[in-house]
Image 1: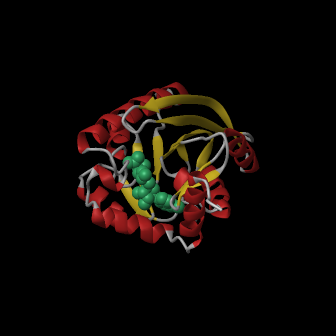
Image 2: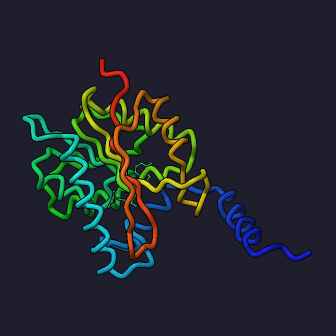
Length: 232
Ligand SMILES: C[S@@+](CC[C@H](N)C(=O)[O-])C[C@H]1O[C@@H](n2cnc3c(N)ncnc32)[C@H](O)[C@@H]1O
C-alpha cells in the first residue's frame, strides 16, 4: 500500500531525529562551517541581504519590547542567552546595557569576542549556567526552540529564572506553533499552552505576547515578555 507523501516525510524525520542528535556538536560545526556569516545563526536558505533585513526586523521588535518592560533606570544589566556570534549583543550594548553573552559553542564565542563588542562572553550550556550574577533583562533569541530535549528545556528555563532579578524581565523570541512538534532534528516548535505550563513550573509567567511575520522566511515569530511569579 502506498504511503501518503506527508506520512513518508514524517517517517524520515522521525528516523533522522531518532539518531542521536548532539546539539553542541551540531552548532559548533555549523559555526565553523559558516564562519562569522549570518548563515551560522540565521535561516540558511536566505541570502545575506535577506538575513540582514530579517535581523533588523527582530532587533527593532526586541528593542521596543525591552523598552516597554525595562524603562531606563540606573541598573541595566543584560544576559544574552544563546548569543551566537553576537549579532544582537552589540545592539544591546549600544542601548546602554552591561551585557554578558553566553553560548555553548566555543567557535561562536571566539567569533563574538573577535567582533570587538564591549561585552563579556562565556561558554556554557544554558541549563548548566552558573554565573554569580542576576540580571535586569535576559534575552533568549531564537535559542529555546533549539533546546529540543524536554528535560534540558525545563532545566534551561530554571537556570534563566535563577539568573533573573526578582523584578527583572525575560524576553523570549521563539516560534510558537499550534502543537508541539519536532520540525527538524535541531528544532522543536512548542505551543503557547506548553510554554505557559513550563514557565509556571519555573515560577515565571507571560506578561506580553506579540506575534510578527518574517517575510523572507515566510514564517511567524513570537516575542514573549516573561516575569517572575514570585518576586521574593
Ligand atoms: C539560531 S542561533 C541564534 C543566535 C543569536 N541569539 C542571534 O539571534 O543571532 C542559536 C544559538 O544558540 C546556541 N545554543 C543552542 N542551544 C544552546 C544551549 N542549550 N545552550 C547554549 N547555547 C545554545 C547555538 O550555539 C547558537 O549560537
